[in-house]
Length: 240
Image (cartoon, rainbow, N blue to C red):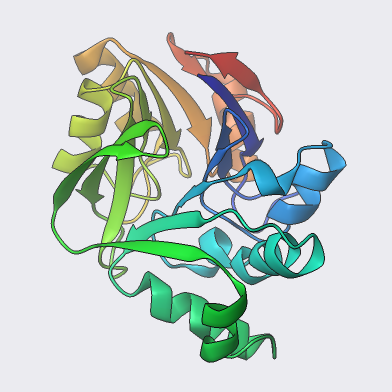
């Protein structure tokens, strides 16, 4: 799989918000500005068949209406897009369209081919979703419930936003590489910190790549290098 970190930053930073693209046809989270970032890189949004949403905070879903309008109304693609996310994701998409004064629910259903898979159990394995094996794993993001991380094809893990919890450990343990929330110096109930990252690498001996970084945390990580932990820029690519 070709993996690219479209964004590695938290919301109040100069970096794009956390977002990961796989093989140019699957994307994890759709934060503000995602469509523009894809177009700047000359990636065709119509190639994206699957969108995984970790949770429904604005910096993870804000661009969904702009992306969907672009592919279904602006370039008039007729290919179905599957959106996987926490229970209620379909209603949240409708609410966003309404907040932006875009299409109504009826108009979305008439003009856009969207398939929703709503997650309502702690862990769900989807054996084949547009050619990928995806396991959703419940994680802990404070009062934002439910929140999920994912393991894709048994090799790539994504924690989403989460404090240290059994779900995060399961993701790291069952992946070769994990793209992990690395927000703080010290982790809390909502986000991982340097202390949690060090613990996970020491315990599982796996590689972790940072995302959802605040600027001050990014600089701290750069000055205190941790073995098997990468702090990268937006646009970083690797094969797995």
